[in-house]
Image (tube, rainbow, N blue to C red):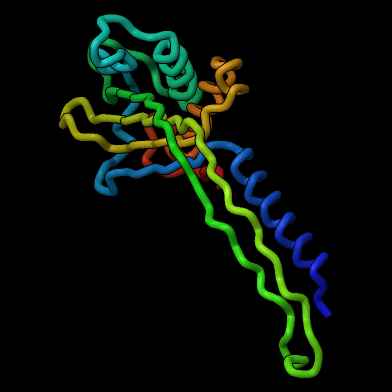
Length: 198
């Protein structure tokens, strides 16, 4: 027989699992041009204006951190920086957005089942709703074939911007960029996809 305490424990467990999933890292999405031969790419450079504010004429500190982390990720995959005739051009964009998530109160019904009419079960209870306001950060990285001027791969990481994130910008940026490139399946000069993180 399932009791009220058991149901409450199950709900608490489900909430804990959801929170731990959010804390495990950013949500990462990728897309690629299926017709592109990635084996032709060996060098890269950043597009002019990458990481700059739309109205600014300089690169922000966040932009410089992101560029450094991308540079490290590309070099670790065998690509070489070539500002004159790169095979790939890299662009990136970081934005934040205020979000609100809410949940209405949930009525957890009483337990009658087979005993309905025989005796009174628990009347049930109401789980209170909530309103959650937070800041969401989105980092998008584009890889562009310089010769065709066509984007060939895109990776996006989305996560909450917490106080811990703001207090450790270097670690946060490195982790976000690493999470995106963990889904990039190629190394320089090879068209054979490598295993990516799940």
